[in-house]
Image (cartoon, rainbow, N blue to C red; front, side):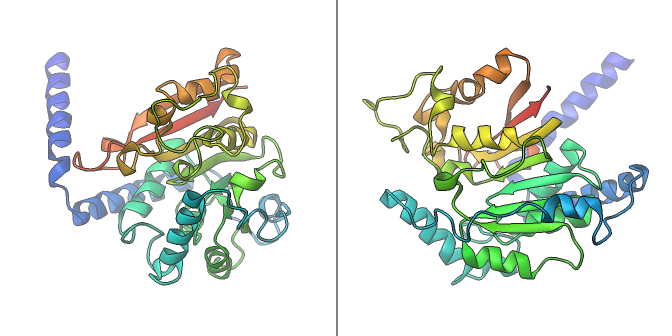
Length: 318
């Protein structure tokens, strides 16, 4: 009987996957409501009190000193960097997306809060835990991580207007802090080691170069070897490794929305399919980390008609 039941469930799941193309924003909003309801059920069982202003947990976020205001911003060496900055600036200012649910091509709608809820639920984010949010934009994820899961967040973004909005919108006493700088130029070496429980980059790292001088696929381009990839600078790999340095044992790095824009800046296409495993080759070999590359089709209820994006999730084991 159990085998038959398993087959029935597998068929239900398969039917659900087939229906992804038909889902509406209202359908995804209903799933978000259900997911947040389950989060509320789980939170009282965690056993930690909410944050209190001045507590040790708040200090663990607010006590981190930001680099100089605007460090590295504007030090663009390519037109593509200037293009990415200009487009995000347009979204934050002219389009006013800070006042909705996030910076996205035509506004984020339900997808940004849905991603935050799925990520927080998947890693078991809990009160008192700490998040590093790379590309924090207007602070939406930081507020959701606090309001839904009770976690504190340090956010980093290259838009001054977005950082100002995030800081001014911070709930009273909430453990949040936002720093204005360009991570590609300045890196994250100023952050403490093994300090955070989760480090996120939601639709961010694909805007950085894949290799030293390589943004998009080119047939005769010189590519850094697998063994040397971890030593590159200003790259997606470099920032991902710096994010990993900041997470505790058991903590995770979550890099989302890879492969978007038809894979134009996807390292698996630009450099090669083994990019992320080569990036973390040393940690994977020494069993300090494990790494998953997960399709976002079912994970975030994407439509099969959208770009086949994926998340890279790296967990620190030691």
